[in-house]
Length: 269
Image (cartoon, rainbow, N blue to C red):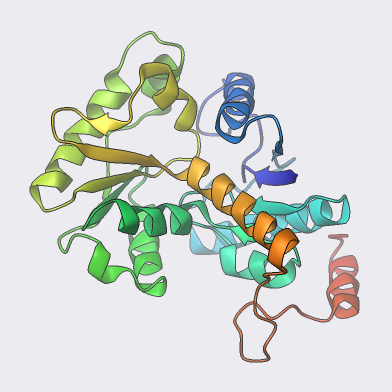
């Protein structure tokens, strides 16, 4: 099985960190750790990125290129994909345009959270993602499973403290995460979702899977997205389960000839 994971950023990580190569290496190791030897995961970096992904307009431009890369991966024979970012950028459009299964890491993590506890909260890395994710919770019909007060909260991550954590130099990143997670727990969360597609390798390195002495699990979004994509592909292969193609379905695939013609017109093919 082959899955495609578009990061949605260029490896140069503009306005974030100069350690893109380290991130790429650790993420590749992480996918092998999570998915095992029978699933190949290709990590896709954009050649160019708008970088300011909290902007509705600039994020939309970025999403077009991420979705285009998913369609190219489909044409290359990939079986499924995820959209990358924990706020599920372009998920519904990607799901509509592609015939292969496309999973959203945020959506997958929220659905899993609903099976692990009563109320979840999600921590994110930028203030601009908070309203986007809160809207996703409503769109996914999961408001009743999230804590009532501020179910999505920014915590004190910087790319500097994250890279140091990834390298094993200190745990400032995890301390900041745990501080905000405990505030969510005090407000009723018994499951915490870690909103950040890069976090998995750091969590594995430090054995960070629960909030200490609370019993509250920490869900890493990328692992959920990849595993859900794997499940969707497996069900498609074994019992023919696919997205709805009913005319009123939100993910009804556009006519392929029209899709390809438009992509070619805009230089996306």
